[in-house]
Length: 522
Image 1: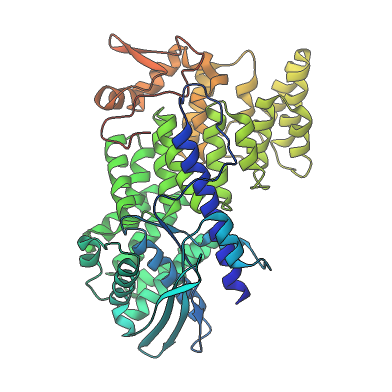
Image 2 (image 1 turned 30 degrees about the vertical axis):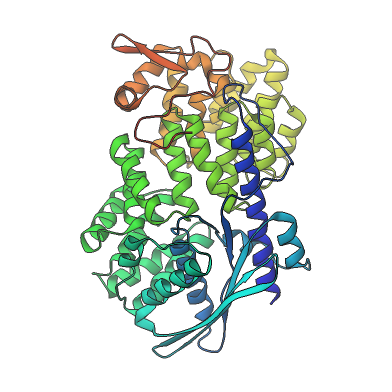
């Protein structure tokens, strides 16, 4: 019971963050100022907000916990597609061990409307799920239901639950969603798929999840879910194998054209390969099928920001972080976008929630001019970059020390075992910057899937980089310039004959844009 309460509390925190985001967007009068519009005034919910608690397992095998967790995620994914219903992802709840706070009191304070909770029993080929939907403010139970299905009819179970929740809340489950759920699945394979997905989302690195997907594919080569799941994990791994990911995703779509994982994987590969039109379209389609998947939404937001559409990217990243506020990945990506937009103080609040993000914390502290904090972020870090980072702090404080800092940067890049061509990102602080080298360095970060740091090409601090001819060359070879011509220009750049001019009026322009045509408005 305490695990259920902890999960609920985290969901409620996610709702509170989401409410703040909604209120901020409604009250914002201009995005051009670049200032964070922070408020503590509560926002009124405009739709019903639901938290789905982890299903409690009764009896059965010891691995039923993983199955129940996966089934809960699937229910969230289906319910998130009910028009007018806000469903909170439960991944942040896994970060909380225990809490003694009263659920009803928290719900009343934060404004969450409903909670769905229950239990699951899985024995042989039968699945029994008991659920209760409660209106938290009044404590009134709207309905209780027990579902008995053959294990192979898991989609029918999800459809029945979604219908019941929708009806109880006077909402409607889209007919297309119902049609997608009108199918069967092999219960053994589905269970293994859920376990592989669970493994791939927990550990870092994700080798166990990748291995589990590969074993599943060996045993069931025509199981589309396994191919799509493996493709997405491969794309999101620290050293992505995009060739294999593309192959697995294409195989998944050949077997099941509705595979959201496969669409997302192909979308991310396409964006990294500068195929922007194709990449954004595929990622949008994946989000339509899996609106509660924060990793897909984060990837979509990053792709938009790569193109220079910073506010549109920020909107997507904020939405992802709001439903998963304790995700290191979501907080780091959100902070990176905010840093790029010059909103460094706001970015620092999100980095504080991801204490292992020492590199991002260092850059944020440097941009804020807080050199003591920059040094502190290196206190527990001991890798080949640390000495150079500390030397750069000294050089920024005392410009006569730049020769020593440059030597330290060069030495860090020549470290034994370092990948060929890997550069030290601290180079961007050098007042005698090699603009072409820096631009190529950050471009390489994106192509190799090393994180969102290449967004810094749009940061206010790198305005001189964007005025250099190497930046226009970058826009041409990455097809960004062609995309702008077809879909709209970010406000910081404008056409100049066959070329482009950026940052003619630096003040206030990096945080404004015209929304790209065919993409969600900011």
